[in-house]
Length: 415
Image (cartoon, rainbow, N blue to C red; front, side):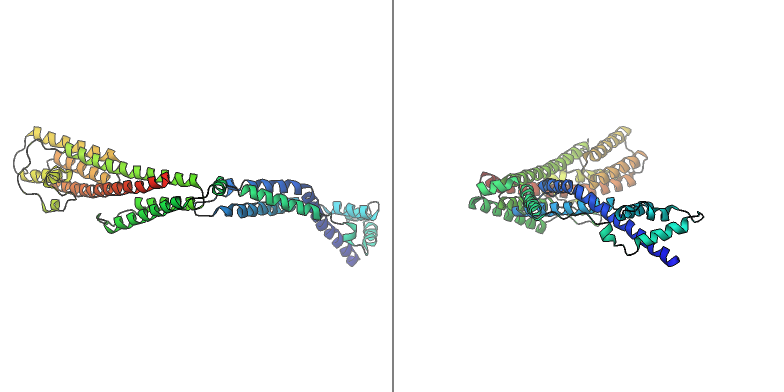
């Protein structure tokens, strides 16, 4: 009896699994058209989902669009199938078996009746007899999901058409109508060679002292070379619009570097003006550290902010043992405060911030009467100012070189 009960209950459990699969197939059959339309939309919108870069050929768009469409189709079908694949209850499966066998709730009674009911054994015996030798594939057949050959061919054709639409770029039409000329390609190659030579020359002639606390950064020469190569690749693909965009970005990069050089020049001029002594500087020779200043002419060294900081530090040491008038001390404190505020507001990076801190420490030490501490802080500020001077010269040199590079870019634009 237990063996017979296990046999028909096993059939009911298998019927539950088969009904779940049949429900998923029915849902897939109903939703397949919607999933296919979504896949077509994804393939046609490839330019938004997966745009092409400058380094890629124009024909890559169509295969990408086809791949996106197929991926959307497969993922959509799997999502519909697994969301709809839910097992029904045992009673629902039993009633489905009764309906397939044409019986009035024979199997269902075997599931519904509880252990303590009088007719429970009779109902289960009848259920086992009804399901003996039953074939689930014959009783609960799966619906047909595979499309016909004609629909499969039409669907493939429409998907390929959507892939062609998604693979189209504006540059494709431009390249077909007007391919790049030999003069344009030659100008693009010359621009790339000039950018690479610029980067190599600046790296070879680098005069800035390397510091262990320097942050790694991408140089403007590398960026210029990257933009020049991007313009060359875009032009080789026939995409003149994108090539002009990269040239515009190159002009912006040159403008940014020129602005940085002007900002450093402006900071140096204002620091020199704020630190200008009210009395003539002493006639003693400059310190050995000033001889290695980035500026070259004696007049430039005398008027540089770092030299004026060293002159002020030397004067503070000379006057430490003698009395200094309160008016002169107030004027010196005011000069240091203005210079520190100017360096802090300049926004020229870490060296400018450290320069402002050193000037503020010099001001604080001088206000407390500690002339030696103020002189040491001024010497530290002079060292920071020298680093800014080296960066200023480097930025000016790079801006001039990048400006010459723009002449090659102008040749490409005219071509």
